[in-house]
Length: 470
Image (cartoon, rainbow, N blue to C red; front, side, top):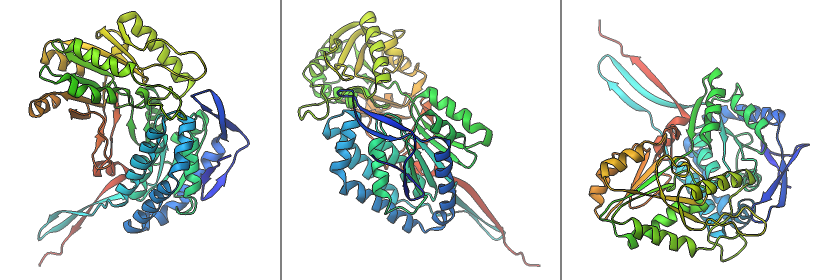
């Protein structure tokens, strides 16, 4: 059984949680179920380790991050197999998350440096701007991309000079805990602490008085609770929450040319990504053709457990989310026309076929809300100004995209969207060097790039008066 990493030691608990393979609902492992005592131990360890880590050179901290990335790479096969077990996803998707995203973010932040800036230099004064680490960071990680999102929080936190306590998602703790075991010998004790547990551990961690900052990825509802928990001590908070990303296909687009990419960006990880296409708006002149193309790709794809070498898409990750997706599926059937999928397979596992629904509109639940599963609504429009307004009417504003043969014209329309990220002829193009902000109820703050390093620091201004001649 894997254990938690606390203060450089591998720790078990009296209580344990089951890890369920969503492909067949079997138990694949048991992991520790941390309570308040283990959270207190982890925070105390991070607090104790903070001064030495803060005072280490950026080069020394970067070297540790590089070593952490190398551990990821050296143990890729084992980590991917664990991720397939706990998520049910195909092996190729697990490899992308761990080798490309997780290792990529660790290596990127290993090389970033924040230098002091001179704001004013004259005969009377010298004013310098410094960015200082905050202390102990609490990172709460979701179940849909557990290793990537853990690393994209650990990397900037450590690069800035903070220490961190990571709380894994209850349904996908296995791979991240194993990574903590593998990091035991390359990370100084207490700098990184990784816990598994349920709501008790999460609530205690985010309200802990010795935590200086919370970084959370997950639902908007939970994000609100975290903001509330942070308020008594005014902890800094970065929230990357739900999305209902709109993609708009302009009338000059080539349907056959763009349909494969739109399909891929809509059903990536079986729809379980916050910043993929959730609403596809297609001009009336292309509507029928686009519906037919997307439906054909969905119908021709294989949904199966990750151990099946032919699997292209996996199951919904957990029973609670599966039940929610089934409610959205029923709503889609009631409000529109199902042109692909829609019927559940026999057998065990949380499988939902890739489902495409047309003839829906704003006001329908499947359009207004985020199913976070493999259901794509395709919505008709005729006027550009109208569709931009419709796309912006959502309370969510994480990502959006415009698809056209004229990239420059599309870019002008893209800038009218209110989402934190806007793409042209692509979607969810994540890159560790590119900031990824969240607007409206999709969250607050930014991750990625140098801008994603700043929230892990406090701004300090040093203002030095120069001696004046008598």
